[in-house]
Image (tube, rainbow, N blue to C red):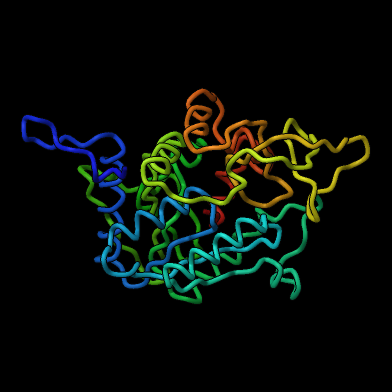
Length: 310
């Protein structure tokens, strides 16, 4: 059963459920951007938030096609299951995919590898170049306010200056769902249709809409080792150091990104309903629990956002 199958109350007045209200708001945002901007793009990595965002975009323009391309900033350290899902989804929906590769920037010297080997922080320059080279004026992102305190400051329409930078003190009011997309030449607007969603909302929506996800979001056996309180997968981009023991455990991922800094959690949630119950019981956000790059400092995410990060 999908959200649209829910019947109206007996009184004849249609009262939206929480998920229906969130869906309606997101669809409204997609349509507003399509009407207001000339060259939107949707950031699509194959992660759960971008999957839900793309699903909402397809509903917003159904029965027509999605009216803009999708873009992915590929660190080169992505989970292969997620890349396979990304490519299959793009082909199924007939979308145009723009890929900005961090490896290209390392190869020609525009970027240098970090000492810790992670590449999440290296995504900013390829992202900004992809926006500028394609003249995108609105960029849909899957950020949610419950993820992290810097993202909690974000408006649904977030103005970025000619350098792609974000000023948290320069946020426009958004009263009565009125959005101000005005921007000068060279500037662009980041748009966050999922701003008011929580991780639990995302999973309840995935269950209600029967949305397929990469399999690593569900419990599976994987070789992992512990570092900084997280289970990191053994792979070409994350190898155990001296003293870090490899174990085979039943885990799943709450978020996906650079393999070298994205941790798994112990889990026996093999089905979507099991994940809903698991998320409902947790007290840690997915980024706080499983993303090492957000633990660098108290202001790690905000510093990156000011530079032009998602």
